[in-house]
Amino acid sequence: MSDYDIAVIGAGAAGLAAGLKLQAAGRSFIVLEARDRIGGRAFTDTATLGLPFDCGAHWLHAAAQNPFTKIADRLGIRYNSRISFDDWMLFAAGREAPERITEEAGGYIDDVLRRIDKAGAKGKDVVFSDFIEEGNPWNMLVRQLIGQITSHDPEDCSTLDSWRYEEDGGDFPVEDGYGTLVARHAAGLPVTLSAPVTRIDWSGRDVKIETSKGTITARAIILAVPVNVLIADGIRFTPALPEKLVSAFHDCPMGVSEKLAMLLDRPVEGMGHVYGDVVFPGNGPFRTFNLHVNPFGRPLLVSHMAGTWGRDMERLGDREAEAMAVEAAVEAFGSGMRKRVVKTLRTHWASDPWTLGGYSHARPGRAASRLLFQEPVGGRIVLAGEHCSIDSYSTVHGAHYSGIAAARAAMALATPG
Ligand SMILES: Cc1cc2nc3c(=O)[nH]c(=O)nc-3n(C[C@H](O)[C@H](O)[C@H](O)COP(=O)(O)OP(=O)(O)OC[C@H]3O[C@@H](n4cnc5c(N)ncnc54)[C@H](O)[C@@H]3O)c2cc1C
Image (cartoon, rainbow, N blue to C red; front, side):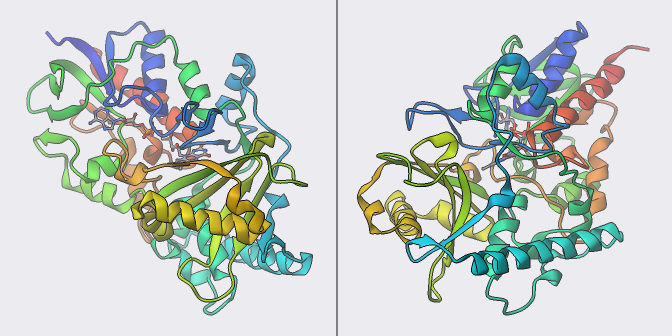
């Protein structure tokens, strides 16, 4: 007799949604989480800067359809439904760039994204970089934006995977924190924390799960850990997972997506809550720097760094990374910024052993591999997580829906007869 009908491994948005579904259905289950907190990549740090800061997920993407928009309304969690990426600003030489320049850069970026989308709509599973004009002066901004969207470089992204992503409905930043929202939604769910799963033996009728707190058994498991943890063999399987599935993991890896936040002595003057980028003159290695200014009127500058740029920044020492960020603030708003940074916060998702990256995107020619994640393995293992979503991968709501689907599949598998 197994200890539980179902064991859920990982308490990010996917594992929590699965757990809540199992709880509502009255099934016997356990949720095992490696960290001493729930939420995974949805995490709001309130301690470091003395205000809520989302280290990972921050926007309710596809907000009109996103179930967390309604959940936020119910829980009284605030978000901003008025701000739009269309109001993006470009800064250079200590001020806002002339409108003509911003329009030229923005027009080129839109054009590249449109061409990528068009190729995907035609069913073409080709590489993003095919649509970037060689030598265009705004390529640094295109690369930065694609990095932010996919966590990869354009050379690593599939147009078809991108086309399948459902983005309509607005992108609303969560003022009280998306991490707080996810955690409060799951407040009534029992989760066993600080219990990393190290080995899963599915050679017998029941699945044996080894954790730092001992071994348990379940009739079926929901594997809701990040795909890069699976790629890195963060959990050992006996027998090994099917080769075809493991190769599909490698086809849809997570890239790198990191943030660096600067707490200022006061908000940047004369500016509301703004999304922007600063461009540096010359041919240095980092010619652009993303800056999210005064979020919710707070005295903050937040930079989002992704792809190779994110990996390079994540590996820099604190001092070097902070110095670079301060230079970006000076380039955007003038030399007065040098003395105004009170404190900084950096994320390290790429070297965090329970995440090991940003979010998933299929490699060129490999969009079909995601479909494999929908199929249970050996009648006992069901996958969940953002990487399992076909149309909302790389998001919290995509992870959430995958958890609900996984719970349904696991309940069917764990029902005798
Ligand atoms: C910088 C950044 C910005 C982002 N911005 C947004 C955004 O604005 N909007 C949005 O919708 N999405 C955003 N995302 C993506 C979003 O955070 C993820 O898609 C989503 O949170 C993933 O949920 P998940 O449950 O699939 O995985 P995770 O949240 O990673 O959860 C997996 C869980 O498994 C646990 N785990 C790992 N290994 C083990 C083990 N061996 N044993 C037990 N537990 C284990 C982990 O600790 C973790 O809690 C962002 C991500 C990053 C990194």
